[in-house]
Length: 336
Ligand SMILES: [Ca+2]
Ligand SMILES: [Ca+2]
Ligand SMILES: [Ca+2]
Ligand SMILES: [Ca+2]
Image (cartoon, rainbow, N blue to C red; front, top):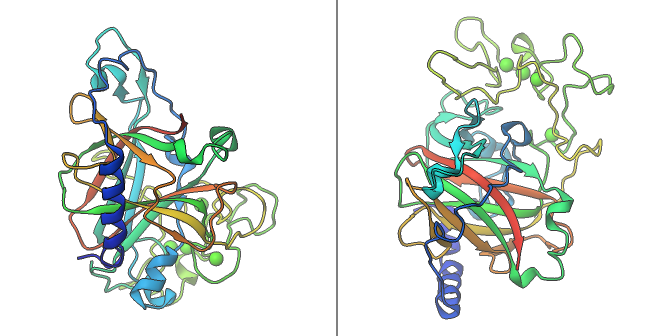
């Protein structure tokens, strides 16, 4: 069992009972939504960034932050090129020729995550990894007044069948301190918002030679942050790594020029099972289904979240499972 899940199984049961009592309407959306044009907000891979260590993992595991950094597994995310999900694939409607840019997210716990310096990492029950993005203010206008009728909806398809697991979705204020040191780590040494020569080091600020415990035969990339992408086999495992990726990277994902360290958020445990799952509101074709997550029915809260400060959205995964691969065609906040 996974640590976070065990501690919160009571909440899950309560949550499921609430959903059962309130009645869960699983309908076939394909008849009513055939002409739907999917929203492509939040689907560009470049909007998603590495995440800080989830606060509840620190609290429940009784493992220090420094050690949990060594338990970070790999996660990678990408857009296949070009726009590769056709709306007709989901709704079985050949007349709808719209395409959207599907976002693939893969939790790969057998592999060591970036900025995890533990060369002898192996996957364990306390392996973890996640991604986060900033929530656009315009997308949640009106949500505060109608929080009880607000939802996060997502069109999802699993690329690997791995039904006996959960993942976490979190909404609120989430720490940007990815390299956990209470300092703002950035490649932008001279604060000019440009990637200058000798800045593309990864947010650790070191190129390989200067990373601690560098060894030119046995440890070429101690901080495990070197970007690579294999465009022959389309291996994306290291495509979000930051040293020599040609992009200016920093911990500041909301672009307010400082490190936000607060952790005040709502957490939702999402069962991966796509057949017996109260958070699924409908099914499309070809394995697609729609999550509809009631925002007021969170599994638990971390810190003191406020519905008027929903600034960050995080997905994270936990445990030593097989790879979990989500393909997402829409992420949307909805108020009814
Ligand atoms: Ca930091
Ligand atoms: Ca970079
Ligand atoms: Ca580096
Ligand atoms: Ca490196």
